Length: 135
Length: 431
Image 1 (cartoon, rainbow over the protein chains, first blue to last red):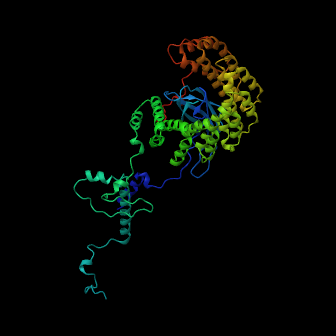
Image 2 (cartoon, rainbow over the protein chains, first blue to last red):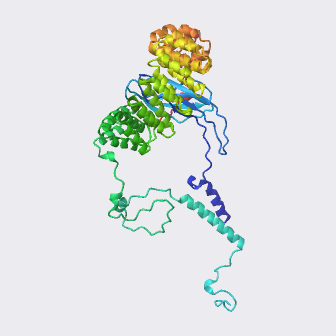
């Protein structure tokens, strides 16, 4: 009988996740990145701008560490595999503005992808937007 | 007296225990252990929830043996009623109809577009498809775009939808977004631009009425930019009246657009505008200086000199350096090399050199040696070498030998290391 009890206890950790109590959700602390430049532009020369905010890391108990600051913002153009660095108007701050100089020559335009990295190495989700030329 | 008791006072034979019972403590322990084991095994082998097969499909594919009867669990409050074992004759008419777009003559073309692999080609085809589909039946086109799975293809379809629907009937497009709950900041930005180009006050009212969200922020910025193309002062005045947290992006968009037609007026407006932070003002100054530099680098440089020291001047000077490098590289590099933040400075110098090289490679090759001789910071030179390594590795080697006395390269990577792992990391956006 003791073997049965031990078997039951041994199996318990292997139970499917959905049968266990969900632990409290803690913030991952990843930066948030936003594009502020409109998708339609009247000129071929385009200045893409946006913001990146380091949110800090919160524990499950609700306490929050101070944000480390944004280290860099990278962008990738549709069709390219290379991530290039955007310029920041400030560096190492919890909230920064980033800038990318580019051109948009067609009505279809090009899709750009952006991601931010904070000083601790946390990366934001990738956000994308197609920038088009419109009269 | 117990009527079933025998003469000995015991229970009748049918109720007699087969074996002597174990002690009470051991019996409890056994029950607990068995219960725990059954609980663990039960959870372990419960199959994951699966979709209920369609009764019609089940009927055609089911074997002849009837299913074993089993007790139905009590339905949870609010849970949908279980499907009946057999379909009543009238039920098929009550089933959800096929999506409205499948009957459209454009649907076969939509399927072809969806099959394209290359994102750029697919985007072009999506644009053409939506232009014709919206002209014929915008509601069907919208239903198809909204039905696509989340990702780049859906984003492109919604963007193209709003571009053309916004030209034809923006109010209908906005009503569709509200009715269907499509929450897509890019689509909202496109719709706001097209609407604002024709009727800015209506577009502004729509954007302002959106619930607080990323979508509203994007719509407001697009309204301001498109409005500023026709009436910059009105657009800037509208943006300036927006609530503080949402003011910066529309105001920056309006001023950047204004600067394409009248940079001094935009700069004067910027000086009087109210921003939440110096960072927001710096972003607006940077956005304003680029079109100004394209028109007149000298006037832009004069404006830069008039700015007080601070984040706005730094941001504007960075933008000026990159933009002016195409036509006035010496002045651009001077501004870049005088930025206060070292990291910012090195990056802007590299970006300015990139602009210079892309615009006029011969002039760059003729003039960069002298410029790089003025760069005392090795990291600054490295940024330039790195840029050159990607564009003209032969000249990069020549420059290294000329300026930094580097040994001749034998095909090895340059002194400037390739891009950091973070930049070249194989991470792809959603398809």
